[in-house]
Image 1 (cartoon, rainbow, N blue to C red):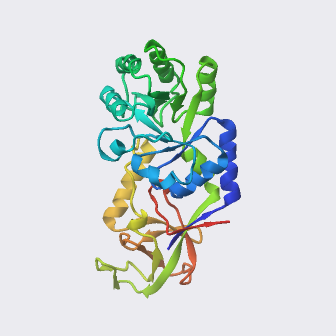
Image 2 (tube, helix red, strand yellow):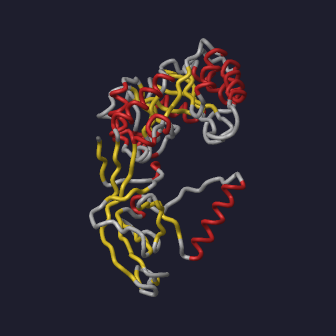
Image 3 (cartoon, rainbow, N blue to C red):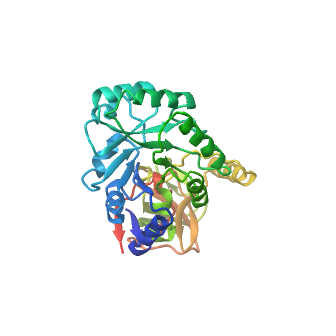
Length: 348
């Protein structure tokens, strides 16, 4: 069993600290709910008293709709197919629009839809170019029923300051003839938001916030795995699905958590520094030799996988002379919250 322990007081203190720095923020609940679940995050957003909650996709609306009673912004752009196509005529939903054809199609299906216009940023993911934004503004003049809730900017996470890019994008909004609307932004620092507010006082900047709001205080969250079994082995003993042999005397420890939970799965990373590239090379060498460091720790020491994780459990190798936990004990496991699914959440 994989268990997430939440220090509720610390968790909520971080939320209020984040909200205090950015009172217009829009909480984001998407994917696996940052390891906590979207429904629970929707309840936390309701308790915060914010007016809007953002979800990633139209399929995620069902998880939060009955919990959070305010407006629901869908970050994935509306398209005339799939789940998005049937999500119309709902005055709580705010659609993201990034193509002229989608603007026309949505207006035909729901002439009174609430929308935000997404601008294309250096991310090159979705959105209107400067010319496209001008065309959208002209088209909106003939679609008076549509309720334009603002303009969305999805910016890169890394790199230097995004201020110069946002300034250019803001100038494109003015050039398109759009009136001052709220600007829904992502991945801007408090300093950048403050500078934009000073430069563009007639606009309201609304940061869409997920990681900093929910995972900003990692000390409030702890994940543990239950020890399920322990088997003493001598050097050369065969074990596991793949018939591996023990490298030396020790214990094969079976613990909760496997690939179904996201254990042992790693999202691709852009290793840009020499240190990061060296680390990736070292991990690859260990993998090739059959010795892979696991995210599980016993007594503060990270242990090796005995073999690749199973679906719902993992096997660790603990060498002789090291402390071996009892069956039923909990050991620490370091996880990437956005790719991990736990069996239960315990609040304290």
